[in-house]
Amino acid sequence: MHTKTLKALSDALSAGELSSQELTQHFLDRIKQHDPGVNSFITVTEEQALAQAKAADEQRAAGNATALTGVPIAHKDIFCTQGVKTSCASKMLDNFIAPYNATVVEKMNDAGIVTLGKTNMDEFAMGSSNETSFYGPVKNPWSTDHVPGGSSGGSAAAVAARLAPAATGTDTGGSIRQPASLCGITGLKPTYGRVSRWGMIAFASSLDQAGPMTQTAEDAALLMNAMAGFDPKDSTSTDIEVPDYTADLNQPLNGLRIGLPKQFFEDGLDAEVGKVVQEAIALYEKLGATLVDIELPNTHLSIPAYYVVAPAEASSNLSRFDGVRFGYRCKDPADLEDLYKRSRGEGFGEEVKRRIMIGTYALSAGYYDAYYLKAQKVRRLIKNDFDEAFKSVDVIMGPTSPNAGFKLGEKASDPVSMYLSDIYTISVNMAGLPGISIPAGLSNRLPVGLQIIGNYFDEARLLNVAHRYQQETDWHAQVPAAFA
Ligand code: GLN
Image (cartoon, rainbow, N blue to C red; front, side):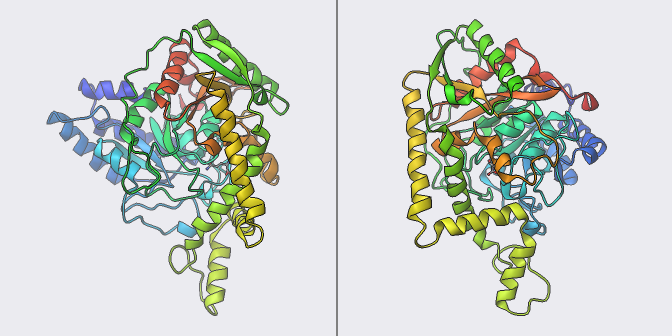
């Protein structure tokens, strides 16, 4: 049952072959049995999940079910879930019970989806390895001494180990696509503004975007139908029509123009990863696509610019966690200043503090123009590169990450080398574009992802392009042996 896709589970529920209660119980049992070795969940909402499953079964029996009524998923612990702990994997929010649902959660509840629990992540979504969580690192199900990627590492690992059929994630600089790549699953980061950010704890507001993490592109399309759309509560969400993302999944790829950016295949790319990606691209050629060499000349500026913009916005967003307005409060403060200092000092982890320091510095009087404003100008150059490229191509392809999963602890003391693992994903966030990572092969028995980047609001095309590949290959169906 657990190796089935969301689509297959939805069909089985519709056919009456199984009930949501059986299905939900099965995944809850799997989490109990297997999660201690993976650590992909922070909270399992067993009672609530079974109640939702019962309601879903009743809805199906009454004949008013959606395609997703009764299928269980997990939410990254960055989404507010009413009455359920929402920690962002931080000691700061270890005792925070959200009083309301994020719009994404609300929409999924409305579609009848069952929530199994909340997944582990890097603290406040800052990281690429899921090692910065207050609740301990997540293990890659393909090899438990390797990282699953981050920051949505818990969601990726849970789906890879088939502890949940799908999960939500968020992507500020690669946090859906990079862990999807490292765990061998499909992860879509939609266009900025496509999915509501309301109730999603903010890291860098101009970059954060929620998306689905699934076994297949078809499943991602199903979830996008439930997640996407304008939200009057989020002023950055866009009021344009949401297509049926499942409608165009079988379009032929004849004539599809695929751009291959030179800068995505240069030094720094692991040779094995490069080979896997080239093979995937060759398959697209067989399916009728044409390959076009393109340039994204400002790619090398994306990481330095991101590490000004993202920490600057984070330092502002995280200022509310001070032990007074929100979050952990230290014991026995001597005075107000001591309360602020110790609450923030004790409540935040090292990486979060590093980002707050960088961001506060970059925004301080006298430095704002030199750093934040300059970084925003670089950001425009990065966007211009993509605009230029999309004049001659329909999608852009390359690796999601320069390497397959690395060992736990390997980069923990070297933040710059950690930051470099997002070299191919960050520019997509800087430009606000959609991107998807799909499993394309293995390197040393660890998964490798192919990244496909699309033009603004072109998610339907991305999903079609990804789906066609998954019709021809079975990388997306492979399950790590210990979890088969
Ligand atoms: N790894 C990047 C960072 O640490 C991106 C994180 C994310 O997308 N949330 O900031």
